[in-house]
Each structure stands twice: as structure tokens, then as C-alpha cells.
Length: 259
Image (cartoon, rainbow, N blue to C red; front, side, top):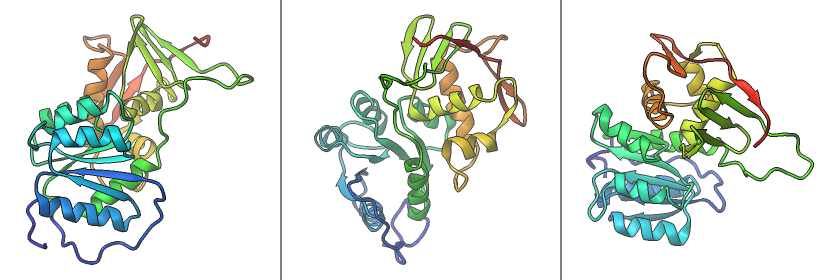
């Protein structure tokens, strides 16, 4: 098992069991040995695990079993990983980590833009994969859009044609609802909460991912690119301004009444 393609660390010395009661992980990888290693690590981390090798079967399984985490290879028979991710996002809010041997930024961007939360380049360490999943699980899931009867008004921000409901986690552009992935929304919210301030990539990593994150800050730039496209944020008067070599800044939002 130590020489399995795609794995950069041996599979022995698995991490100690950690409670993940009730959490289900779906592993979709067409290399059986690699899929077995990833599934083994996830089981030792406390997940119930389903391992599949075909994209079409993966979508059907996710519809039936509603996984909490999906580890998804890009190169799959049946449906490729991009199309699987696209279809999952029509009915699932699972955390999705893409595994890819494609280092080109365009491939990462496509994967993230259709709803993946993170990507890991092959070869990778299964321990790193588990650490990345742990970081995602510490982030909140989609908030309930319906407020409590006696709850205070929701926090809504207007930024030109963009309206952001921070509590309902919803966004409109020019009156049209825009679907953002969990990660894209969290990045936008982190910028809005520090209006007019340059937010470094490191701060976004610590806020949106986790202070124990083991990836690189380039993932922030990829998500920002996808976020800008969905917000139609382009030209000289951009909502999200790049501060070269540092991070990003968003103009001061204007409070609005709840929708």
C-alpha cells in the first residue's frame, strides 16, 4: 500500500480514533487502492464511509444517504468529478474536497466554482486530507433563512447592486438571487465585517478555514476569482479590490432593513 499512486505518505500509523458519531463520508475515487486508503483513514477518524469508483453511482448514493463529507476525484468514469460536484450542489450541502492531479489553476477554479469547498493535489498525504476535513467541519453549515419570531432584524448589507443577507446567507445581484458556495459566502462575509480594511490572505485563511489550516493561501485567490464572476464584479470599479501582495478590501457597506 505504501507505493499507491497519489499518496505521498505511507498508510501505516493511522491516526487514533476520534468521535464522528453520525457523520457519513462518501469517497469517490476510481483507483481502488487509493480509495481504500482514504476510506481507511476516514473510518479511523470516526466516519461511516461509503467508497465508490463511478461518478453516476456517487450521485445516486449521495441522494440516498446524504453524506456530510464527499472526497471526490476529478477523473472518474461515468460522470467526471466536475459534473458530479455540479449535480451534488443541486440537492446537497455536504463538504466537498476534490482530489486532482491537475495543477493548472483553471482546473481548480472550475472545481471550486461548481461548489467544491477545497481541493488537494495528488500526490497527497491522507493525514493532510483528514486535517483539511477537520477544519471544514469546524465551520458552520448553511444558516436557517427563517428567523426566530422574536429575533432582531437580520443584518443586510447593500453594496451597489449587490445585497448580502449575512444571517440568511443569501446574496442578490441586480435583484437576482445568486448561489454562492459556503466558502465563497464566508469569504464575502469576512470582507464585509471589516469594511474599508485590507484583509490579508492569512486572516481570511484563519477566519474562513481554520488557524490550523495546512493548505496554502493560493486557495483564497481561486475562491475570490469565482466569487467575482458570480457577483459580476469586474472593471475598474470593483466591489472587491485586490491589494497586491497583501490581500483584499471591500468598500464600506451600507446597512439596509431586513428583507
